[in-house]
Length: 344
Image (cartoon, rainbow, N blue to C red; front, top):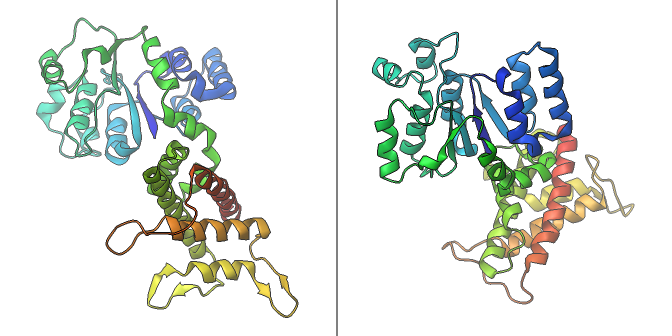
């Protein structure tokens, strides 16, 4: 999951950006930002490029761009840091907004002008994703003098929004601990290389990997089963995507051309020569990759699958533990790296 940072005066807020996102930015990006600030020659596009290079923070520097990101990526955000006033020079026109959000009316243009963040809050509350607004924070130059106070007060009265989440500029330290302690951020930072490859498959697969990393150490039977289901799904999506990029195999189900026959494909990768009793591994695979492919698919199929009625399959003998899950996680990571090398 990501942070979205919406601020229409990025050049004037480099110091604040470094203060807020120090842990996420890292030393190299901080030096880049400081160098740009010292030069006095500040291109907004370059600032955004450096910040978004983290893979964790999305940046919008005007209201139309903010609406576009809300429309396209709302599910990805776990923390919202929003400047309430997004009406900097040059002032946007109604037509600029309607290009990305056609339903925006002239009345809304007048009502939310210089309080565009309020409209973004309204979008979040009215979305069908059941978002909580606990992690939606307003930045404002004047906390005590808020136009459209009635709009916010209504949400505050009905506990859809907390007044504590309105933060006066210059007092952003309240957000730092929250940013640094979001569990997902640590997971994304530690697993960035794997997530970059999984992103090629799709956001759902990437999200499943993050969920797996969050819960992989749980040792109750239900969590272990759920983790094995995630491993199986991530594995299937990864190998199926890989198979589509490799033209020289014939491992698709004849009755369903979109379904990969996993064991035949794994055997094809191994390419065992019976006559010479040697493996001629394909696509830079070796015994490490073959062992990982076999293990993840075998255990995932046995313990991370369910019967036709949706119930967990009954398996006799030794049962998987969190150790089993973690062993498969490491094998899955090697498979993802191998997958990424082939794509590159």
